[in-house]
Every structure is written in C-alpha cells, then in structure tokens.
Length: 438
Image (cartoon, rainbow, N blue to C red):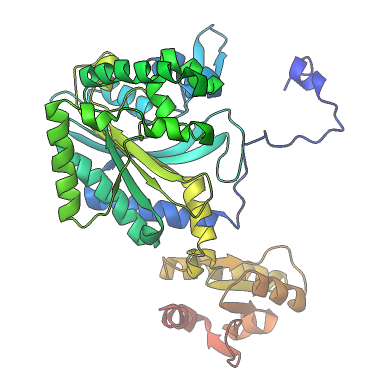
C-alpha cells in the first residue's frame, strides 16, 4: 500500500495487524468439519434437484433497503455500507435471498420458469459478536421460484429435515410454523395489533415503542420477560387470515402430518424481514442456550415484483453454518473420520532418496486417485521424520533411504497398528496400499 495512505499512517509499524472483531479465521484443524458439513449439503441439494448459484458479496445498497425493509434492524443498524470511488452506495450482503432474486431476474431465470436454487457463502452484519454468531458469518440457503402451492413449502421443510437426519440432529431440533397471510389480511391485522399495543403502551419497552409505528409485528417477537403476559393476550394473526392463506396453511400442515414431520404452531413467529408472506418457519434447538434458531425461512411471493420483476411466487430458507457446526460439536456429533490425517506419509533420507520420493509420490497418486499421501519436505534425520509422520495422523509411513533406492524397495511402517515393519518392491507398493486402505 502506498506510504502516503492515511490508514497506514494511523497504525504504528510495531503494532501487529489482527483480524477484524467478529470476522474469524477458519484454521486447518477446523476445516475438515466444515468440509464434511458442506459435502452433506451439496449431495442433498443434488438429490432434490436444486442447482447452485453464486452471487457477489457486494450489491447496491438499494437492493437490501427495498427488499429487507428500511425500518428493519438489519438495514437500520447492522449493514456494512459505504460509498465507492464513484460515489455509489454499496453494501456487503447481510443475507442471501435478495441477491439471489436480483441475479435470477437479471439473467432471465424467472421468465415463465420454475427454479430450484441453492447457495452458500459469507454474509456480513455489524452486530455484537457472541458464540456461534459473528459479523462475517456463513449461510446455506435454498430459494424456489414459480410454484405457489403448499407442496413446495412442504418440500423445502422436508429437505431441511432430511439434512438434520443426515447430521444426527433431528432429535435435537424443533420445527415451528406460522402463516402471515396475504398483504391485505396482514394490514388489517396490523391495525388491530397497533390498537391493542396502544392500550398497553405503558408496558412496551423503548425498542417496541419505536417499532409501534414502523414494524409492529416485530414486537410479537420480543424476548423481554416484562412484556410476556401482555404479548400472550395480543390478537393472533392466525385468527385473521384470509381464506386462501388459511387453506394454504391447512394443506401444508396436512402434508407434514402425512410425512411424519412433527411441528409446533407458533402464532408469534413473524420473522424479521419485510418480504415474507403466508408460510414462515424456524427450526430451533435448546442445546445452544438463548441462540436457538438454526434455520429459518418461509414464503415471499411479493419480493420479485417489489424488486421490479413480474410477479413470481417464491419460498426458501437460510441456515447459519457456524451455529450448526457449534451444535454438532456441542452434541458430540462430529464424525471421527472428519479429523482423519493422510493415508500415508512418505519420508526420505539423502539427496538421491528425496528425488526418488518425489517421483514415487506422483506415481502412487496416479495409481490410486483416492489416496491421501503427504510427502516429507525439509530434510532431517529418520527419528525426526518418523515423529512428523506420526503427528500427521497417517496410518502408515513409507520409508525411502539410500538402501531402498539401491534395492528398488520401500519400507512400510505401520503407525496405528501393532504390525511388523515390511519391505516391499517399488512395483508392489500401490497394490499393497490399495489393499490396506480398502
């Protein structure tokens, strides 16, 4: 960076540069569990016929202000927004749905078509970092477009339920359901709700009083215990649904009943984003304390039109990867082989043996495409190399010294089993490894 950069001059050269608060490094020992989770997700999406879409992490600020809602906490308090050198207002994406809709509209994916899409990647919100919740966090999301019936609502819920079963989490999560009805029904309900809250204004906390004029439905989601009794007596949206939304919800629950999916109807479940309509749902857990939601979603039939496209029904969900990783660790559901080291560690003593080891490693990788083989680099004596082989977690050490090079053999030392060290012909090593690892 140029020496005249003001940001550079503010930081003394002696001060270490550290990661930004709430934006964490993912270290090598943590990566295998993430890769396991991502593999489970990717194979599941393929089985259900969902295709991956990847969108930029930067979007125009207007995209999120128009979709999420200007009076939501995300837009008002949490977005990372700045002007670029052209004076345009840009925002690091705080969620994935709006970006997915923008991309689908821009590239003509919604014109007289149905789409089943999924994505994964980093999102950004400036909120207080805590365990399982960060300022840069990662989400997996599903978005389905062009289908208005309750069958697609049921499918995305069943898809998420299957993921919990694959991960061993199904017995530890609870599905909560509600319906927000149509925009017209919700507006009529909103008027009744505001009238009720006005009668109890003295009970409302400061945040709820602010929301009373901007987003009164969000008051229902308050966790303030001093308001619990008052909220319990508030009018319920399910009692004010329009006929079509009521039928839609009944048909959805009938499908979940038929599939054996247990759920709890939560009339106070409203979700924090303005674009939801009809079905909303959350998967929650009690294993992580107060931060209990691990997946949330619902139907957003008006969002495409709201962003300038032709009306298109849509439904989806998003789940936070960090929180699900934390849940797997908390419940001791991390697969043992997710931390597995390489299958074999190839060590060599002497200049000639090092050259031969490099070639042998490539030969073995050609012969065994699934083999994980780590080559020792950096020299050192036999004891130090075998110690590093053991530390790597490899099952066997392949030993190549000057004698082995002369004789065309390779030593095989078993690191995880009580077996005698063997000496094999170079030509037989691939076959022996294949038998050992299968």
